[in-house]
Image 1 (cartoon, one colour):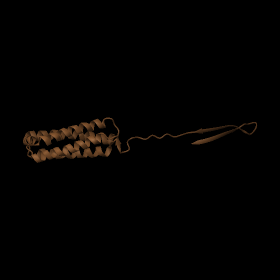
Image 2 (tube, helix red, strand yellow):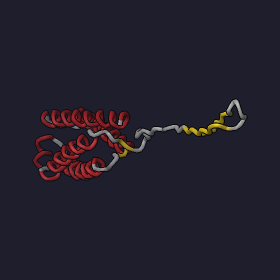
Image 3 (cartoon, helix red, strand yellow):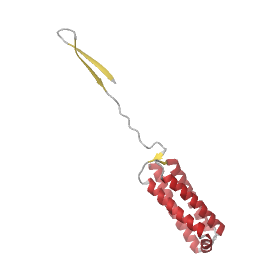
Image 4 (cartoon, helix red, strand yellow):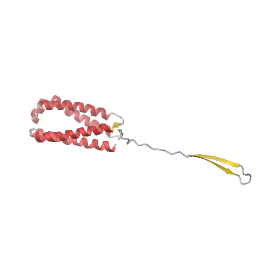
Length: 158
């Protein structure tokens, strides 16, 4: 807003002083625009998820026969899950290194992890696994559920 003020001298009816003032309005923008998460914890949190998923996937892929026997699961499923987890791990690592980290990517990862939890718990109950297989499947479902909870929080808060 700009305004000009002219004061008249009382004795001469002529302008004495001319003053110009200008006001500006400052606007602030926030990073919570729905596109990216800038919290400092998001990258390390996702990298821990990627590492955990990758180690699990590598174990399933490399030692699939032994794990299948120990868990009472078909070897083809164990090895296939290993390959799938390695792909997911790579995707999570890429997601973790983006700046800002895409909010939709984190939300999609949380959804995938929640599906994994439900499928794991269902398989633990109905899959005919050994006791070790049931314990392992429930344990990893709990860990994945914790990652999913953190990712939901990040997607909302971030």
